[in-house]
Length: 349
Image (cartoon, rainbow, N blue to C red; front, side):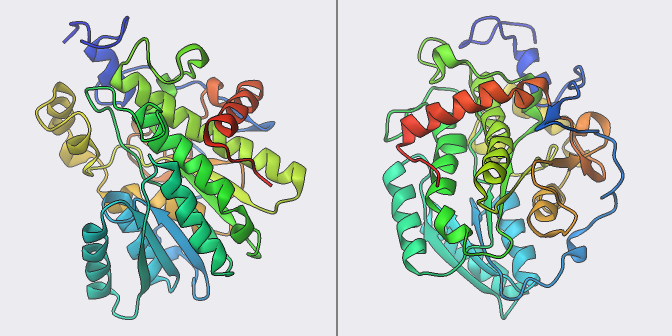
């Protein structure tokens, strides 16, 4: 178990498993975001369920990665509540199948598919241009899509490390490009998905693209930490520039989805350890509760981070999640924002 990872100096396989809460590890530190303390065991939203969502009739919402896993559960629940839902994903066939599944349960669902490859900035720009050209408001953007820990380092079409490109840079660009449509809403929200892996993540500005040292789990943790920092920084910039956008972060704990199958693989050591506790982890629908709360609840606050509050935040009732010190570093967040602007060519506002 403690054999060194084949790729990545100083990380053991046990370290990688601990990073995601698959084996025991230390709890994350408390942090402060934008001057507001975050307490993990707050009970103000405990017991909240998808059935508690208000009517979303008249609301227009976009879910990235909405054709599978928690993204699909988001799209299904939002459709049930009456929202007009846009599923944005790479695979058009899976998108069509997802729409059929939703309409089988919600016959009058107003749901459609839009092509989006977050690892291709031209695809991101194309989607944003199509939606902005429609001239309608966008009430909620849920930045959900992700890939996790592919064994070999991949490179996006734009030359970026694949996890950073898909999980962070693509969403950073999409959010900025959709800002005109978001600002047309009376209550625009951006919900960005992080992960319990952020508790062991760090932004390696000296090797952001993992060119010198690729560890699949460390690269995933870095990409999700970047997402969390982006969510907090967007809230600060929205307040400073009067954009009116409520930026909220969420994580699902540990949920049973296709993320492991498509990342490390079902034959990996990570998957074998993960499978031992599979029955006690959240379902995809349970994992989606934090993002649904962030996207729809009147009590969801900008600059907050929501997730399960059970053991090590792997599962349990919804509440405020711990914010690691790294995510609360406003100087690093501003630096990361500038790097993302340079790499994507997208400047907000």
